[in-house]
Amino acid sequence: MFRTLMIVLVLWTHMVKVDSFCDSQLQNGLFQDLLNMMMKIKGSSSEPSTCNCKKIVIAFTAALSATKSIGSGAIVQFDKVWTNEGNGLDPNSGIFTAPRKGFYQISATTMSAHGAYFHSYLMKNNEKTVGMYPGQGPQTGSANIVLKLKKGDRVYIKHKNNTEKIYSDPDHWSMFSGFLISE
Image 1: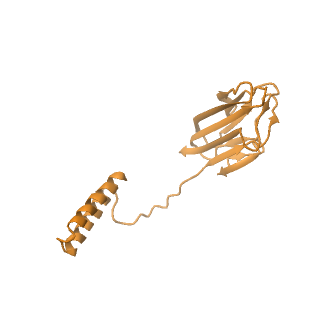
Image 2: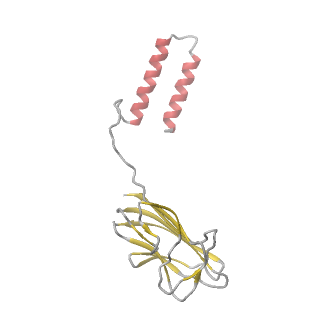
Image 3: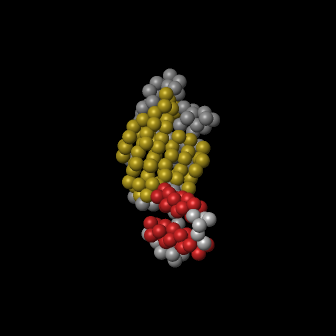
């Protein structure tokens, strides 16, 4: 794209420089040559595209709006959903179920309440992937991971143990997010 822009600018500069010395037929020829070079660089013909391609968007972002106690082994349920394109996130369960196979970027941030701890894992189909341990609060812990998911794979945040609190407030300190990178 940058190379094409540079070619256009260079040729345009030459056309302006020779404006008083050339006739319109020469200028049209230069312009046609420029278009032909751009089409060769792009690698397509002059025929219009007949591609009916649709970009598939799968993305979700959810957060907690208030501090809550989470039981041992419980899945964190996020009450504020900003994005749920593809409807993969079930806000009632806190589980994202991949609607399509592919590579997904998954992120989570948890915050421990004042004077408390909150240990959790980012899970894939009941299997631990990465852990988050913010320390004695208020502290945050974050996880970012790229996962290869099959259609129907489940991803969620699971509390490790004890009855610790996960902190949040209207500023949404604890969140869960993900999107399809490619199939």
